[in-house]
Amino acid sequence: MNITQKKVACVVICAVVLATLGAGCTQSSNQSGGIAVTDDAGRNVTIAQTPNRIVSLAPSITEDLFALGLGNKVVGVDSYSDYPPAALNITTVGGFSTPSVEKIVSVKPDMVFASNLSASVIPTLAADGIPTVVLNPTSLNGILNDLSLIGTVTGSTGNSSGLVANLTQRMVNVENLPIASHPSVLYLVYWNPAYTAGNDTFENSIITTAGGVNLAAEANLTGYPTMSKESIIALNPQIIICNGGMNSTLIQQVKSDPTLSNLDAIKNGKVYIVNSDIISHPGPRAFDVLDWMAAILREPASVPANASTDLIATPTPTPAPG
Image 1 (spheres, helix red, strand yellow):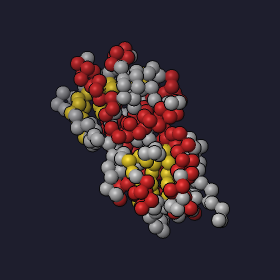
Image 2: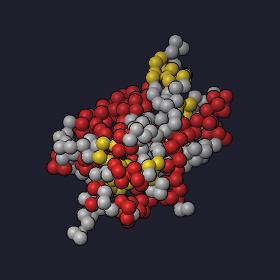
Image 3: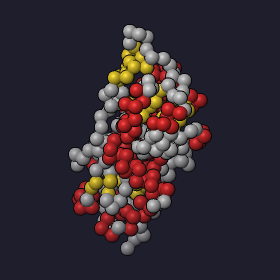
Image 4: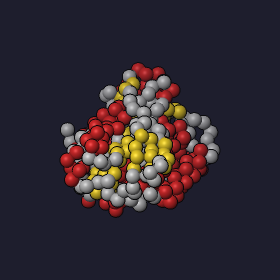
């Protein structure tokens, strides 16, 4: 298994585990003057003072911190945090789901942001007096809420409120765009078996906000389930969007599968691939995916395609007659 395939496997495994856990956070000041918050795992956490040395245990959280201007305070990241490029220069403290407590402690953090996959280290960190907040957004609004939470915890509410306002306006702009119909969308994380994203995922939130109908959600699927080829054929998606973790491999597998040749998406050349590191990370760049997807799903003349080369947006060519 090469590095790219390992990243795709990680996306699938992480997505399935994340889907089984809850979300939602609140925040308030406590009587001692610190900040008391309820994180996405439903845990009550108190942060006594503004942190100056932060560890991030998920790529999306690393992106959040840098987007909020906190990159200079990040002293440790998970091994998958590779965006922005400056994150590559920060000490790694273990894998996405296998962080090392020893490495975390060695960088002397006063605050850790974790995903549900890395929550196993929380009791040990708590014993060492290191507060940990779990972030697990399952929608675009969840991403906005977590950015606000990070801003409050880190004393950077000015930056977070500005970023949240900007991203919220981008979402509103997309929702206000004209749309002639709401095309059916199949989002694929993997093929054989076909992993997709159900109605409680942030990918579903992107699809529906962009104007599409997520077929997995319509089938009342939750989390990141598998779908049979028979189900996919019966649902007949108008658009297929492939996770690009294996570059063109996934899209080629879908296009070359003879059992799918009569799908509307295949016949009409509406099969796309999008960068795995963007669509699989529930951070600010998810709104780039939203803009790009709206350009596909809504009136093309009204929505210019996202110009970023980081967003791979390659439709299949329309098949030749006959």
